[in-house]
Image 1 (cartoon, rainbow, N blue to C red):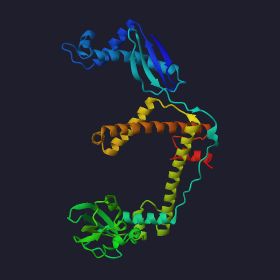
Image 2: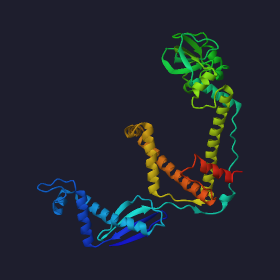
Image 3: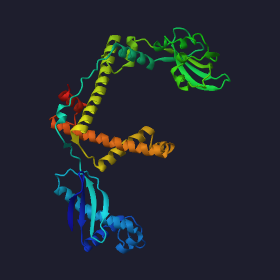
Image 4: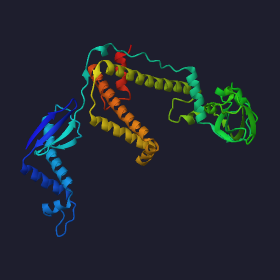
Length: 396
């Protein structure tokens, strides 16, 4: 038996196996034994029936494919061991039979090499990151925290200086529903709106007429604005809940942050929130910075061809993640069925393109870190360590 390793393109090889008739027959018998090990044949114990009887029970195409797989697998490891300098991706594909020849082949991709085209990358820099938390961001976060722990209490009347969640039904002059919506009355960000003033002292199940004024309608209603929108709108208050926002007492703060021993009072809470905001802004800015930097290098200074094997693996990983988010394969399949054929096709193409794009950036980033001698222990690396060390090296 003879074996050949043939380079096809930048990212793949073909392993060919050339064999004699006798070797093919032996391989066929071995394949039949493997395929027929669980077959039940009268008068014979399992695995002890004559080869010709087992073959009669098997699909000829399965026997043929099993024969070629046996021949290839027998030599595949030997070929890889003899060529350890080549970084093969262990996922053979496209088995091929050469007509009228005792020869079969199978393809293997290799991990891609990044080609350096020029030195332009050396002049590329990253911008300085602005990560300081503003007073407004801190106050907004404190308000959101209060909302997260707010108590919703049923009530029949909307009172002044009281934050209320109000469920409304907007109707036309014939009392046909235009839209169902929710507004929050007397929240800090709404206190200057005249629209919300009209709800003060209104009661549950009350209906009243509202003049249409573009600036007075709640944001959710603007999407319904058209030539058909009536000059006057009828409104029914369906439900009212008074929102009781908690105070930042030491007791509440400890309850909100039981695992943060250093957060016990309002000042410490503000400092904790400030640090969290700045960390999030830093990570977000860092990712954007690195993304732009790698895109510039890919466009101006480096080239890479990603093999289809890796794209298929990344594509499958993304589909698996989608299945988890949708709650299983059946629900994802149902979602695809609801899309038009053209949209489904575009959706799949987008995932495939994103898979390739992600892999290109990964290998270019890897090449850059090697070139700049950025040492990373990937077993112990903390989140964004590679990106941070790269930024420290090339930032303006």
